[in-house]
Length: 162
Image (tube, rainbow, N blue to C red; front, top):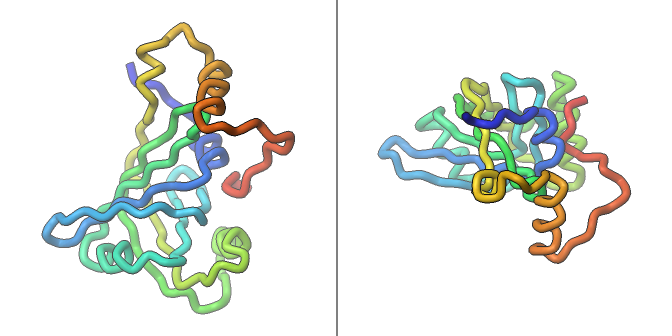
């Protein structure tokens, strides 16, 4: 039975998302994206900071896959859908674009990739099956120990839906 996770929660706790595109011949490309904004369960915006191959592929083939992963809880989501690209013209019309621009900060925004989400599925680490008795908190502690990091007091996130 597949596990279901809250999309907003996963987006809020994902540092990066990975955008997968392919050209007309099916040659794949995957690229990490740091600046993104989940508008709602149907729409994801991704900032084009340095995405030449993703943009080229989107112009040829709109099919995309995006993975968001909460690395500490070792779970996430896979989104599939259609992507489109618009060059950044320096002003936001939509509130969701304003939020994305704000998240970009000093990064040079070249454009906005809009993903119209058609399916959402869960992604989980094998530990959920291998160690089903282990709590999520224990999984987080193990992951933090593996990565050599400590929790911080402030749990706010730049990718939270507002």
